Image 1 (cartoon, rainbow, N blue to C red):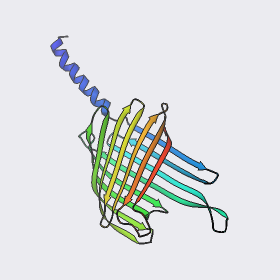
Image 2: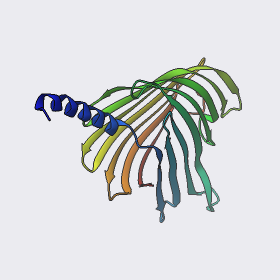
Image 3: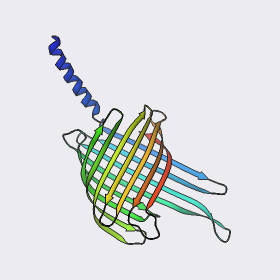
Image 4: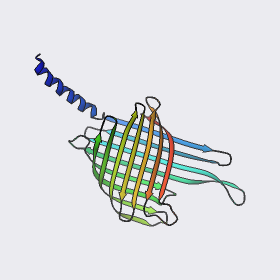
Length: 247
């Protein structure tokens, strides 16, 4: 074959091969993470955090389902001298997102539903419904950034029993850096601006690979509400170390 004819064909094949490499594999990609701390002696207590993340990749759709939970029990000494165990933290959350893939790479239209039940939080219940547009803002060999924006509707119950409803504007970003062949740093941020409150969540996490299916994850997360009852703080933080199993 003539080399001048072969070169364009080879270049075209390389382009299609690179495009195929950027397409996520179809099917399920799931992970489960768990972390626990138990203390005894002068301080007695247990805390457990866990998360299930199921991602489904279809030809035209990209779907994600997340369940997460955190609770903490502590033993306290009463004025009478008796020791009793009591729950000091209890939070469960669930979310589901369906994203329709547009013709351009990484561009999507999505619908999202979330619910949080936080027994000791400023909002004991917080639910949202939203739609929006998502895209990949940039991508390099070692890092990428995905962003989302769109309107929504929320319903929240404060710790004082007052229920709020209204429209929101939601923005989100997810940044990932490949630190090495076995380590990845990520930064997730979600901001929901409502009629009387701005609700935000952020997590910075470092994952290190143990083997083909196991990872160690160290994370620091922040949740903030700008308008809370007088007996509650605006910001909650959590530091965790968990094992992540991918399947």
